[in-house]
Amino acid sequence: MKLLATLFLIIFFTACNTNTKKEYMAISENAETEIGQEHPGKKLMENNCYVCHNPKTAEDAMIAPPMVAVKMHYISEDTSKEEFITAMVEWAKKPSEEKSKMPGAVKKFGLMPYQFFPEETIKQIADYMFDNDIEEPEWFDAHYKQMHGDRPRMKGKMGRGMGTGTGMGKNQKANTQPSEKERGMQMAQTTKAELGKNLMGQIQKNGIIAALNFCNIQALPITDSMATVHKAYIKRVTDKPRNPKNKANAAELQYLENFKKQVAAGGEVNPIVVDMGEETEFYYPIITNSMCLKCHGTPGKELESLTLSKILELYPKDKAIGYNENEVRGIWSIRFEN
Image 1 (cartoon, rainbow, N blue to C red):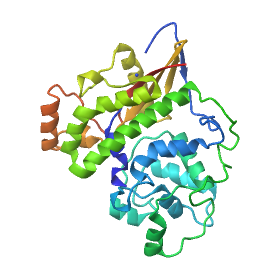
Image 2 (cartoon, rainbow, N blue to C red):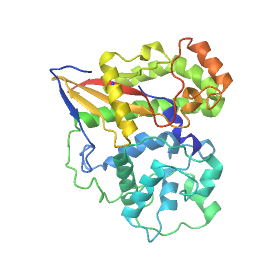
Image 3 (tube, rainbow, N blue to C red):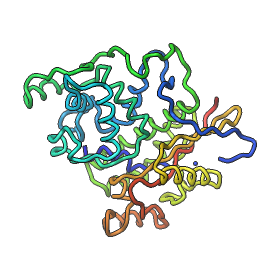
Image 4 (tube, one colour):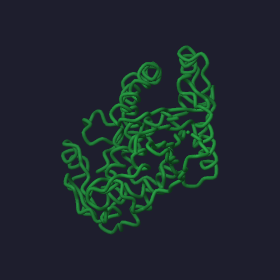
């Protein structure tokens, strides 16, 4: 569980035109984010959770419990959907051993550090988890029986199927086209997941120093490859770059400052979508957590001297240190055709 935030080590890094139409859009509870009848929480869970909680990962390679295990520990026969959603939201706001209902996972994987998620994202994921079957690893049933015996009874659905689809996404229209906001968010999330998966593998196998070497060589090519997949222009930009190629331009800096104010105010942070006519520009912040500070924190505190030496070797003009938790490190800057 400790490395759930690893994917957020990859801190993702917002354009101003007086003739463009700017839309600052909140995520609607009933947003039609998925084509067909698929619950929006399913894709959100896959994009945000499966880098560390992937049910296809071998048991000895897991760095966090599978999501089906989370569901089993947090839903009892007496748990209502509202109680489950509230528990997930409160956990995401401030993880702690006192709040955790998985002491074994905390002992095995460590406590999950705080990381930024929009509250609506957590609500949609929790709503999906409660009402739908959650894919589970092939090894999970035998593992659970060995450790705990027979599975407990609980509300909601369990197992490998598609579930009833009776939650927040139940009224979605068939063949609904995703909005520009939803398209941009999917591009950001899937690219983040691809970067996170690869970086996490390096950290698990070889440590932080190897991960720095990996980022130095592979971060931009992986981002470019995902841009090709999505047929879009995808960048990670910041006001304090590590790699000079990630430096934000003047327009992006304005969006970045806007996100900093939103985060500092403590409210919901929403993507910025700019209608450019034939194209759409999408901006979304990446926010630091405790794991990010291993490479972006304060020297002599979270940032160890050996790590700092390697950073300066790879990036002599590095500016990407000195961050605290819950600060905007940079933004996604994405452009795609309408």
